Each structure stands twice: as structure tokens, then as C-alpha cells.
Amino acid sequence: MIKTLVIQNFKCFKEKFILDLKNGINILVGNNEAGKSTILEAIHLALTGIFRGKSIRNNLTQYMFNNDIVAEYIKNIKNGTDATLPEILIELYFDDKFPELEGDRYSEKSSITRAQGVSVHIRFDENYRDEYNALVESKELYSLPIEYYEVLWRSFARKPITSRSLRVKSALIDVGFSKFSNGSDMYISRIVQDSLEIIEKNNVSQSFRKAQELFMQEESIREINKKITDISDLSDKKIELSVDLGTRSSWEGSLITRLDSVPFDYVGKGEQAIIKTELALKNKKAEKSSVILIEEPESHISHTRLNQLISNIKENYGDKQIIVSTHSSFVSNKLGLDNIILVSDRQVTRFNEISIDSKIFFEKIAGYDTLRFILCKKAILVEGDSDELVVQKAYMDLNNNRLPIQDGIEVISVGTSFLRFLEIADNLKIPTVVITDNDGDIKALERKYSNYVKEKAKEYIYISYEEEEFDGNLKIGKNKYNYNTLEPSIIRYNSLKTLNTVLGTSFFNEDELRIHMKRNKTDCALKIFQTQQKIEFPQYILEALEKLKKL
Image 1 (cartoon, rainbow, N blue to C red):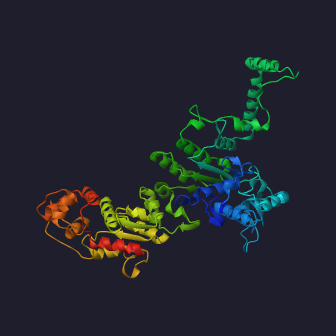
Image 2: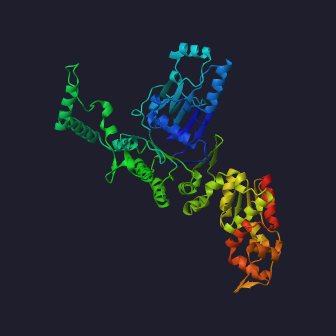
Image 3: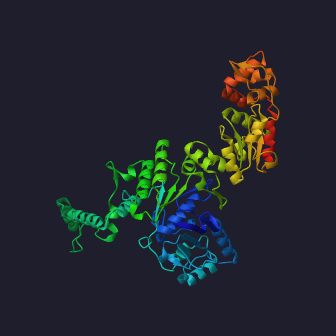
């Protein structure tokens, strides 16, 4: 399959971008405009010669080129400094299964003198040199003269290739984009063709031609053709409506696919994506040489159906190579966090050192906001919703009423799974603060976070907790009250009068308030978050927020 992708000057990728891929599942994650879609488009283009549903040779546009490169070129033309036209290069390097593609015509030269692969090179056609030079001299050039470009689609063996001659097949499944022609989804048509034997294709073709010929024999068509012929007085030749029997009107582009008698393009986009993916996965003829590209599978699909789709991908991809782009933590968790490729600022960060236990944990309990964490600038990890609200309020008080998210900081409730998220933070060097209760046992807490405190402390991870243990006589029922959580800590820093005002209560002593806040954690935290009353926050929370600025 594909070992390495090289992109140069294509869309958001300026100059040269190199991405190594592995067999099986690859998950592309990143913020908007990071280049995830461009990577999928580049791979599909190099394997099919198709860009956004059309042949690249008939679909060249300036907007395929990197904007900065084009702007620099036009500026140089106007200044008379450099008239070199920018070029696009896309290369795919394969494993050693395609000897017919082996050669030395590739850009990434190293100690290896030969490689197997294909390239798409969009460059200036020297046949237009004189005309182009005249245009440059006039200095009337305001856009890229795309009409002077040629497309070279070749193997590394320097031989031109076609989608038919290339054994590696590609399927691009984009839930949010469908390309139809005469009501027929061309991707579905191609998958169906790949599934048919030669004799079956011939049978369909013959039946289709028979239907075309019967069209001409219809009495109503004969009458119409007679009427059309009689209209013309200037020619003695017959004028007829007919059906194109040439190759352009082959059955592949004319027949439509239906689902429960409904044309495929009228079916919901989510259902289209599920069917396309399943057909691609189960296309046994291309089992050894298929690359399946899936753009944001979470779009237009219910949670239940998405779970079915992801399970189908995991269980049936076989020897196929799957490359998925996603914004969904559920998708990335289910497909395996160790398969993640983080794309940011045109750079790639690998995420493949997560432990087996954590990988299984996030796959089985896939609801955690892992991507929200992975993609943030900085993070604050807390245990629950009430902690999240209080920490956000404390941050707002320190930062002119700005929410943490406005500064690129995510406050994420992780339950008791702090160590799972810290493993991600450690792997990706994400600046992270943990704000947690000491629960009256500081030694146990320090043992839990032994890889992140004291002599093993990391420069990008900070564990913040109350450094003193508190006790008292209060019991709730038969259970002893825990004085070492967030709520009693807030009570220690604020007067009974202040908290009664904030919470809308009228308790006469702190024990009544402690019981109320324990039983109504989220409600009390929400009132604290919404209050205009000045409130003091525990010192360990404030220290964590100050520390975060320095990480």
C-alpha cells in the first residue's frame, strides 16, 4: 500500500509536505484548514486522475495551487523579477508489490536509487513558451495562466498511466459532497462494475444497447421524427431524435443505482456513506490493492449508525488501507488512538506510543473528548461538571471575564480518568493542568501521580491540589463527611453570608451549607458561575491557573 505521500504547492500545502502512512487504519485529525481534506484529495487524484468528480486534465484551475505561491508569482511578474511558473507535484510511494511502477523518477532522492510509485505533475507546457513570454513582457498578467499547463500522470518508471492500468484502486467517500451525473452516482457505478465478472458486464452492455435501439422503434418517436423532418424545407435529409450509441453513452454513466426503489441521489447522505463504505470494504476483487479514503464519516449519520459504520470498518478492512479524516472523538476513539496522525501548521505529529490498556479503554468507553484535548493549545483537566463550572468562573475572574476557550484553553471533565489523559498529554507534549481533590490522603494522591510530581514533574504538566488535609465531625447518615473536596474548600474561603447570597439560601451554620452543597453540586456550581457577587476561590485553583500561563 501507500508508504509515503509527498505534496508540493497543492492547495494549503506550500513547498514540500511529506506524510508517512501505515498499512491498515490511519486517522487524520486537526483543526479546520489544517489540510486533512487536501491530503485525501491528493491521494485520490494520484490514484484516479480525478479531482472533485472530473478528470484533472479537464478540470485545471488556479485554485488548486497554493495561494501564497500564486500571489508570489504574480508579484514577481509585476516587478519583473521572476517569471517561473509554480508547479504542483503529488507523489505516492508504495510498498514492494508493484514492480511495474518501479523507477527512479521521483523527487525524494536518498540512498535508495529506485522506488515504486506514481506521481501527478502539473507544470508549464514548453510548447507555449513563445506565447507565454509575450504575455509576461506585456505585464498584463493578473492570474495564473492555467491554459499553458500540462498534466503528467506517470509511474516512477517514467511511463504514463491510466486508472485502468493502475492496480492500486482508490475510493473517496465524502458524506458532505456527492457528485452525480444524470442521476447516477459515478462512485457507486464504479464499485458495481468492479464487482461484476466480464460476462456479466457484457450482458448488461448488450441489454442496454437493445433498450437504446427499441427507443427508435417506438411509434411515438417515429411520429415525432417525421414531424421534425417535415419542418425543414432547406434539406432533403431526415432529421431525427436518436440515442447516442457511442462510448460516451455507455451503461456505466447512464444507468442509475436505486435503494429500495429510490434513486441513490435521493437517499440521505448518511445512508449513502454507509452503503458506499460497505461496498468498498467488501469489494473482494480489489482486496489486496485498495485505498479507502473517508472524509468525516460522522457527518449526517446518527450515533447508532455511526457506531455500526465504524465497527464495519474495523472488522472488514482486511488488507485494505483506510485513511479517515475526522473531527469526532468517538470515531478516533473507536478506530484506535494509536492510529492518529495530528496535522497542524502543515506539520505532522505521531501519536503511537499510547499504552495498550489506554487504547482499549478509549475504544470501549468512546465518549471521552479526546480530540478536543488533542487539538487544544492548553488544557485544564477536572473531575466533574461542578469542578468545570467553578474553574471556568475562577479563570474569568482572573482574565477580564474571558472564558478559557476564548484563549484556546479547554476545561475538560474526565471523571476519574486523569491518568489516561495525562498519557496523551505526555505523548503529545500538551500543556496541561490537573485540578483535583486530595480526598484527605495526600500520600495516596502523590502515589497516583508519581510520574508527574516532585522529581518526576514534567515541564508541560502540573498537578494542583490542596496541600493540607482537613477533618471534622460532620456525618451524613452513617457516612463521615469528606472535608477535602471542592465544596468544603469553597466554604473555607468564603463567609456563610456570602455563600447564602450566591446560592440563594438562608442556612444558619456551615454544616447545613456543607450538606446542601454536597447534595446539589452541579446546581450550586452553576449559581457560582452565574453570580455577580465577589467570591474567593481556593488557592490551589488559583495557583493552577497561574501555572498554566507559564506552561
